[in-house]
Length: 115
Length: 111
Image 1 (tube, rainbow over the protein chains, first blue to last red):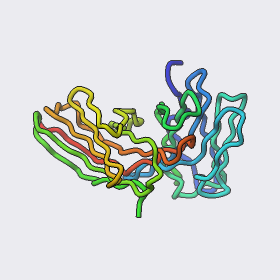
Image 2 (image 1 turned 90 degrees about the horizontal axis):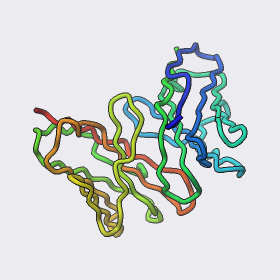
Image 3 (image 1 turned 120 degrees about the horizontal axis):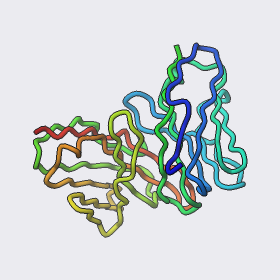
């Protein structure tokens, strides 16, 4: 596709359940990022993948959060034992390379609601 | 203190007015600076990069003052379509990819 795609667009789950969020970056983009945007808040960095390098996980809020990127393309963000405070919009972005500040293109996000 | 601080607004201005947004950042090692725009329930999109010499793109002018760690965005002759949230964004370290976003300033242009 032409842009970053994410699925599902909306997810409602019960507290304690696990959820998986998917991101398909722009074809050929080597860098992929996950962010979280809570209601009325700015975007919060979660994790970053660049090529085959070890991911930068410094933004993950707890060990309930994990992400992987298979084959250098699609990424999955997994939240285990979801809590109500995990409710947010989860945004994925991709960019073409390793140069700092290279434009990141965002997907439409997954709106997660934990009841 | 937040790494990137913006006035959250909201700003309500009449169509045709000039509006200015300000942003400060705390890390003097910050290397790259941007303004992103986010429409309601949409993803952020890059509006413009901000360069030390200042730069202009049509009705939009961005300025950077490294000494004061201050970034600004000026919108002239505002249009109804300019209504959105404007996000000040800083890239902390050269080679690092983590963008730090301000909370955003909400702008509504009134007819």
